[in-house]
Length: 278
Image 1 (cartoon, rainbow, N blue to C red):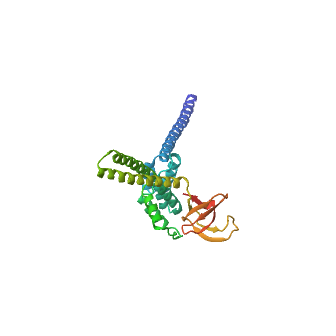
Image 2 (tube, rainbow, N blue to C red; image 1 turned 90 degrees about the horizontal axis):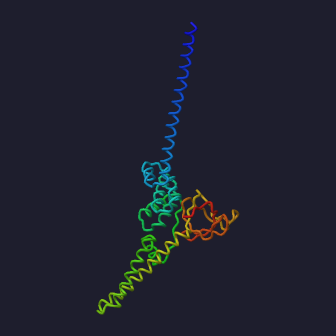
């Protein structure tokens, strides 16, 4: 009888021990699965922060917030890229964040001014802003020169400048050593022509590089802001600007304030926190 009780107690003990061991095993399996899942997700996240292809995939899946996060990370870690700025602008545009879209389209255009897709999307985003400002008219040849300058990027103009300079030197050598008058004329005028093209190309490249380094363009990021006559909140109210409007920074020497100029020539002061430099 006493032996039977011991057997029953032993069986109960073994059952409890078995249950405890099973619980431990189950908990261990859950922890392993959970840890593996975390590591997998963290690896994906790290890859997304560095891989444009995965950001593009997120954009195609309409996951614009994730695409924005990854594109921003790429720009911070790998430096500026017209393609990344363009895709980031598209992501902001799809998220109805028009001001941010305009900022990134403008940055993409600074790096690649000849890209028609960037310019088209920038115009589309601008059409959704409230302020419709008519820029002041320039002398026609200045507008034409600027348009020509924006055909290519800095690198392309630099390459054109080098190639045309080498052609100019070759043409001059041809003029100097060839005795036939017809060929000498061709060499002489070709040398002058390609030298002019080389000089203009280098000037264009220099101007575009200066625009990238010394950025004076900015975008209003506040929904609505009153422009003041002086860098003071008690200054006279001049006019109101809205989110997404482009301005030029004329003076940034006063802390917390910037003097800005509109495309129509109007000038005023705005708090620095209300704009973002392109």
